[in-house]
Length: 179
Image (cartoon, rainbow, N blue to C red; front, side):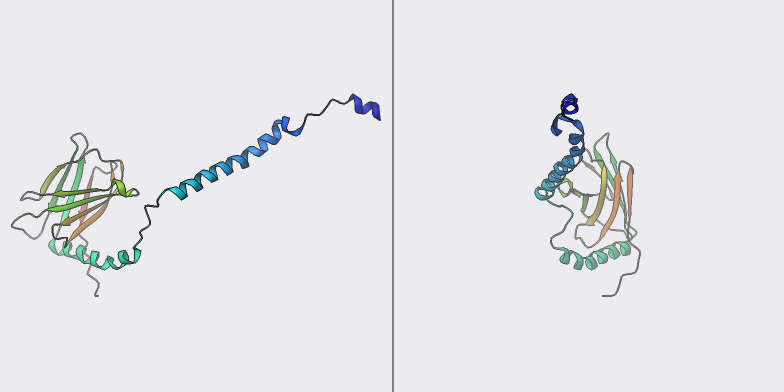
């Protein structure tokens, strides 16, 4: 019995074999990635959560009145972006004629990053057309909001640029809900 034990080759310790290390690699990677995601979740601000959600919910009815006011005025708007010239081109169409064109507020809200939102003030000509220099528009989905100078009406829509070369905003024609 002692002779056969002496004839066997010496066995290396477990840490000198590759299989234990290969089996431990998966859980080790999962721990490192989990710690990294935990760090990101702890240090980055969540831009999608609104702190005053109750006020925002109450304001929905006011926003609907603005949509209905735009429908009463027969408003529609078309926006396009010319990347070669770096120009945002727009046209506001009214069913009800207006003597003097009012300033328009155009808000382009980035779908996920509020620091990339763009607020513009434009003065359309008598026919409702306007052109505005705009640096390169990021390829993204934008929420577009066009409002009048008094902010008593609004046109809203979604624009996936450059997939959609232009966006057409129409007034909501639904009947207003009684308060």
